[in-house]
Image (cartoon, rainbow, N blue to C red):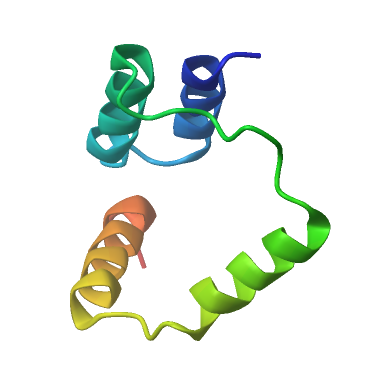
Length: 79
């Protein structure tokens, strides 16, 4: 499966609004400015990348944006 197809599948897993970032990745892959890795990540490399990602604190901007998206997704409630 080629990278743009993978990105399209990933896009389908998320709400709209993630498109801009995925569009830039797709464009870079198609233009040749972003290359696929020569070899897949090993399990150890993936585990290290996940640990590094999880150790970075979440920004206030990210929390606010996620909160807005969750409120929009829940919609109005009739009580």
